Length: 101
Length: 458
Ligand SMILES: Cc1cc2nc3c(=O)[nH]c(=O)nc-3n(C[C@H](O)[C@H](O)[C@H](O)COP(=O)(O)OP(=O)(O)OC[C@H]3O[C@@H](n4cnc5c(N)ncnc54)[C@H](O)[C@@H]3O)c2cc1C
Ligand SMILES: NC(=O)c1ccc[n+]([C@@H]2O[C@H](COP(=O)([O-])OP(=O)(O)OC[C@H]3O[C@@H](n4cnc5c(N)ncnc54)[C@H](OP(=O)(O)O)[C@@H]3O)[C@@H](O)[C@H]2O)c1
Ligand code: SF4
Ligand code: SF4
Image: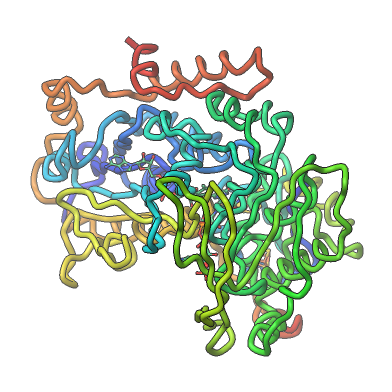
C-alpha cells in the first residue's frame, strides 16, 4: 500500500512533510502536494509532521478520501519535485484554523 | 573576502558515519551553491548505518532509501572512506588538519541499561545485539542466543521492541526471502519460543509503537496478538491525552490494542504475543542463567503528557529463560570530541558542537548522536540540513589556512596498514552479496565477517 496526500493539503501547502521525506518523493502544483508512489518507501515520516493531518498511509485512508490514491499516482510524476520547505500558500493559516487545527 | 568554496579552493568536509544523517549531510553540502568535496568515513567496510544493520529485514521497502544514497555517492565530489574508525584508526585532529570542517554523524551504537540486579545473567540480552546479529553486523556476528525456551520477554514498547518481537513471532517461511543473515535464520528456525511478552512501564496510551508497526501483529502467519481487556482501562489523564487532536498516533495505537483485545485467538496459530502494561522489571533471578523476571506493578502519576510510572509495591513473577531489553540506544564517545555522558550525545547548538557552552571551531554533528536515539530515517534529513546550514553560514570562519586534504589522510592510513574501502570497492562487495542471495530468493546474503568482505576486494 502507499502513502497519499488528501483534501486538507489544498490551499495550504505547509511543506513540513517535505523536510523529513527520506527519498524526496513529494511533487507540487499551485494548490497542493502529491506523493509519487513509485519512489515513496512508506516510512510514514511525513504523516505526523503535517499540521492539518492531510497525509494517510494506505491501510488507513478514510473511504471518502480513497479517490486521492489515483490522483497522487497520476499527478506526482508529471510535476516538479519539492525537496525543500516552501512558503505556505497565502491564506494557509486561515485554512488550517478552519480545518480545526 | 574568503575565496573558500570556489572551484580553485573547494570547501573540504569530512563526515564521520555513513548512516542516513551522514548521507543527508553530504547531500545538503553537494547541493549547495559553493564548491565542496565530501569525504564520508565509516568504521565498517559497508556503508548505510542502521538502514543496513538496524531496519528489520522484513521491511525491505524501507531499505530503498539506499537508492538515494547511491545517487549521492555517484557525485564526483563524493568519496567513501570506509573501514576506518575515526578516533582509533585516525585522530580527530588529523581530520581537522586535512579538512575545513568535520561533521560527526556516528549514530548511537550502544544500548541503555535497566540497572537492576541480575541484568547480566545468561539469557538476558539487549535488543541492540539481537538486531545487529540478525542483520549481519560484523560486531555481533558471533553472538549466541539461546532460543530453547517457551517464553521470551521484551522490555520496552518502542518500534525496536516491535521489531524484535516480530522477528521472534514470525515463521521461517515469513523470513527466508528477506535479507536476514543466514546464521540468524538457522537459529530462528530451531526456536522454541511460543509466548512473547512485550512489556511497557506505562499504559497503552503511552506505547511508542507507530500504528503500522503495531498493526502487523494482527497479520502474522503463526502468531496471535493477545491483550487483557482490563489492562486497557485508562485513567483520566490518559483519556485527556487520547482526546487531543494532534495525538492521533497514540489514539490509533490504543484503538489497535482494543481491536486485538476483542479478537478471538486463532487456535490454528501456535504462538502468542502478549502486550502488557504498567509493569517494570525490578530483578532478574536465576542460577547463572535467567529463570524468572520479577516485575513490579506501576501506577501513572502526573499531568496528561507528563505522566510517569511509579511502582506500587505489588510484585509478580514471570518464568522465562529469555529477556531482551529494548529501552533505547545510547551514543558512544569518540576520543577528542566533547560528549554529554548524561544524555549520551555530543553537546551542540543546532549542529554546531559546543564544549562548556563554547562553540568548538570546525566541529559539527548530525543525526542520533546530535539529537539522541529517536526519530526515523527521514527525521535525519531535516536534522542534517539544519547542521549544514550552520556550517555554510560559518564558511568565512572555516577558512583557516591550507588543508592537507584526503590524500594526506589516506597515506596516514596506508602507513598504519589500514585497507580503506572506497565506493568502488563497496560496489564489488554489494554485487557479491546480491549474487549470493539470488539462489535463495533473497535480495542479498550479507557478508558478515570483515575479513571476508575485505578478501573480496584484494
Ligand atoms: C533496530 C532499529 C530499527 C529501525 N528501523 C527503522 C525503520 O524501520 N524505519 C525508519 O525510518 N527508521 C528506523 N530506525 C531508525 C533509523 O535507523 C535511524 O533514525 C537512523 O539510522 C539514524 O541515523 P544516523 O546516521 O544518525 O545513525 P546510524 O544509522 O547509526 O549511522 C551511524 C554510522 O556511523 C558509523 N560510525 C560509528 N562510529 C564511528 C566511528 N568512530 N568512525 C567511523 N564511523 C563510525 C557506524 O558504523 C554507522 O554506519 C531504526 C533504528 C533501529 C535501531
Ligand atoms: N519501523 C520503524 O519505523 C522503526 C523501527 C525501529 C525503530 N524506529 C525508531 O527508532 C527510534 C528508537 O526506537 P526505540 O524503540 O529504541 O526507542 P523508543 O521509541 O524511545 O522506545 C523505548 C521504550 O523503552 C521504554 N523504556 C525506556 N526506559 C525504560 C526503563 N528504564 N524501563 C522500562 N522501559 C523503559 C520506553 O518507555 P517510556 O515511554 O515510558 O519512556 C519506550 O517504551 C524511535 O524513534 C523509533 O520510532 C522506527
Ligand atoms: S505538511 Fe500537510 S498541508 Fe503541508 S504540504 Fe505537506 S501534506 Fe500539505
Ligand atoms: S511515507 Fe516516507 S517516503 Fe513516503 S512520502 Fe512520506 S516521508 Fe516520503
